[in-house]
Image (cartoon, rainbow, N blue to C red; front, side, top):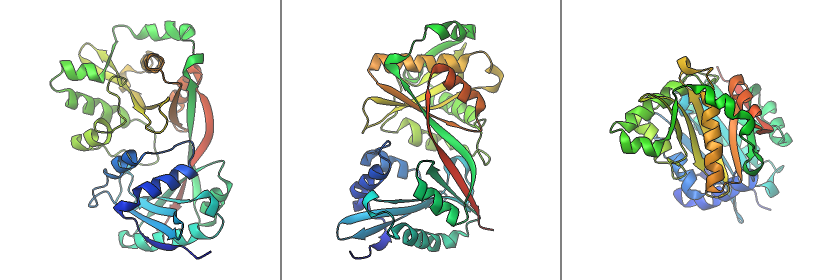
Amino acid sequence: MTSPAIRPFEDRDYPAAVAVASAVYADYPWSEAEWRHEDARYDGVRLRLHRLVAEDGSGIVGMAEYHHVSSMYHPRKLWVEIVVRPDRQGLGIGKRLYGALVEAMQPLRPAVLWAGVRETFARSLQFVQDRGFREIRRAWESRLLVASFDPAPLSSRAARTGEIRLITAAELRERDPDWLATLYDLHTTVAADIPQPEPYTPPTREEYRQRLLDNPDYLPDGHILALDGERCVGESVVLRSQRLPDVLYQGLTGVRREYRGRGIALALKLRVIDYARRQGYREIRTWNDSLNAPMLRVNTLLGFVRQPAWITFERQED
């Protein structure tokens, strides 16, 4: 078996690259359209993405990339990822890809590298630890089977939100000429309080539109907003999956600081569960960081079942 050649990623590689990533992360299959949308956030000037592929006679067998993290941007802090097709793991392909990636990122003079590994991937855990990465945080995906959920025991808690009303982003667009500014202000305000290792970097309004509202998986009729009068004070974002049509992803759920402790986040999540039930989704998946204890408690209360952790590792380069 010949050793794979390593070369820069090209546009024609999307289908094969998506297939490799989906084979490695079987629980999280991507479509080409979804991956292209994610890549579009990197402008090549401020936000960089650099991807390499390993290729032999059977096609692409592995990939490596580095990119900036848009929500906590620093020009010299980069996220790195390496994936190797399951049937080709353990043959040194990941080691060669990592070496090529380290060489490619040198012009940026990286100060910090981050990597994420699922706790069940023993080989990957050893790989990052052997290269000087240390664990800094954990996040969990949690899942809820919609058909088995009973909202009755929690309805009284959600009713304590007072004059707060719930509407969808689709409804907001119909009634508010400045709907984009309204959503942007709410999103960047609540996102700034989500715990993360580095200070929050808000997107521009156009970046927000591109990343969420123009996302091919965004569901404006499932994006639930909490209103106090005409002021948006909380939100829960949902996205579909093109490869898992019976799964609904619940993204950011957040409430303005002065409105917390009133059951609004619980009410938002209950409305999302109701939306999922009415639309025929089998399962809701959401993510929680170990640093975000209040939202972990809410999801546990709702009956979300925690999956294996994803561990963020960090390597200091300076």
